[in-house]
Length: 434
Image 1 (tube, rainbow, N blue to C red):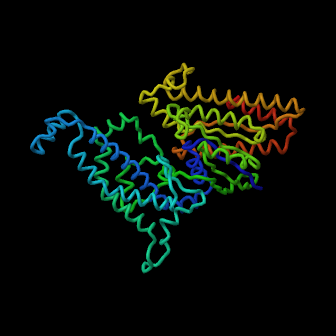
Image 2 (cartoon, one colour):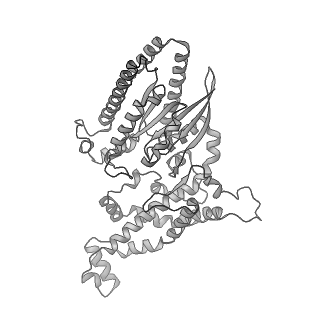
Image 3 (cartoon, rainbow, N blue to C red):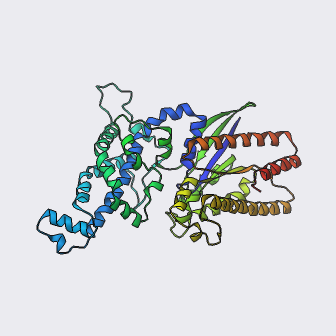
């Protein structure tokens, strides 16, 4: 028996990380074998963040106003003048110079991943879903020492060596109070972004570094296209082969979702709550969390999905909590919100919002099917609060979701429709969903 599931959500909602968590639960052996392949991607994530800091720092240094003191005759007097007005010092210039080799390294890595493709201005680097990027960095893994390694193998080795040698300077850059203040002024919270490893530099730049399960889940590599993954899920009653599709979430890619609805048995939809104060990259007028609500409405009300079971992950609760604790007011972005600025209150409010959207969609479906003298088939709907970088709790949620789905299939197989609706509605009420 095989069943299809599709993971949906906007770009950077955590879809790929959720898929990695599923692999950890149901394909642990293959996940462990792939773990080492992520080392160059993790190092690339570090390069991107470091070069972003360097670019902002150099712009700030160039923008510093000159005065008579800054044109003093000796380096010591110049340094003193810069310090007196709390600007950037020659030490910052030296740090930027010392880290310049990372620019060429990052450019080589981009070229290796893009494989002659061009990016639009400001577009995040990505790989096509059919591109076996890992082979380009480990093609020499099984070759004899006499055979020449590929450019990717050499680049992977060079990147690890250079980052190891640069660890102290990168740490100095990242921990510098003036640099952190500059990032704050630019409203840049790198620690909130995917692929953030600057707080773990010493560990992840060791020459003998091997990625952990959590490192792989944190690593960021944007994929365009559809990823198909197969799992065998066992229970006491049976074995079920699941085919899980991870589809692109950018607005330009959502037109490709429809073909994956035809045979879908379940949809896992991710809505990142931490996006409440962010706009869509491709459509800056639209709030990210509002966009998730609109997508959830479309999925809940789609005539193509009336018999598809829905599992909703209200995701990135950990990042939501950090933002709220930093004083970012949720109510400033959701005007009708009247609760406290704490994670429990916000999560409760947003859960009710998503439930209300679902109930409204179900009412419209029921009305439409009543006119057609039919009834919508019963389906399972579950909502979970998730932080997919908490791999232990996410594993428990994935297993719980599997149990709920298997129980639902048993109910739909053994009981008549009127009993099916009664059982599923009662189950949903007990979970405070409807």
